[in-house]
Image (cartoon, rainbow, N blue to C red; front, side, top):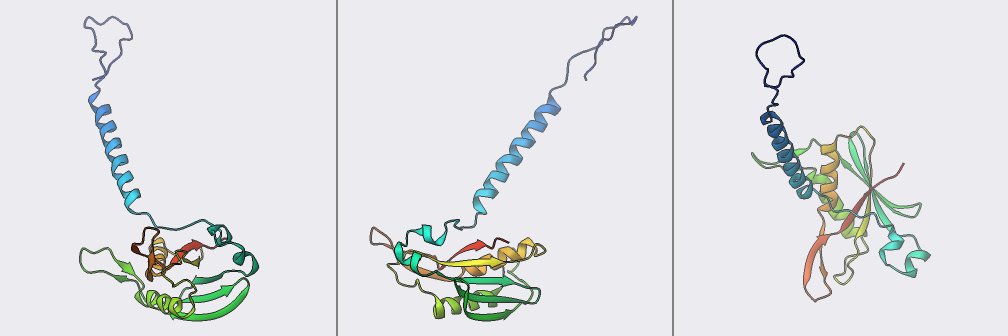
Length: 187
């Protein structure tokens, strides 16, 4: 082990070599932790956009009339789905909040099924971007207080991401994409 010779009257010299094995072990554990974390981070990304609606390339028509957005409010016992155009409320729907559904044994799906179905109905009823040639997505704004558990926020984001639509790509192929791009509200 490590020792330091401080002088003195001892007859036998002390071994002053430092054992490097614990340091190497610590280094290897740290590297393994960082590699595993990097894989988790890349696999657990949620697709979202920070583009302002007018900056999404919609041209002058966005400047004249505010875009229609769906606001999802997370409350203690319910969810509120509100379609707004600027400050004007166009429609409102309330969905009761039931406990989270957890998938079968071994599955990691945690979701609010009724919320996903209600968002799908609202998009089919009031969504403006349903044509296959329009590649832009509807805007959804998530409103929540600071006390909402993270797993519930992820389940709400999954419900917002559930409605899918088919769009035509530039090369003529079709692809599935989410109907909404979710953003968080700024207080």
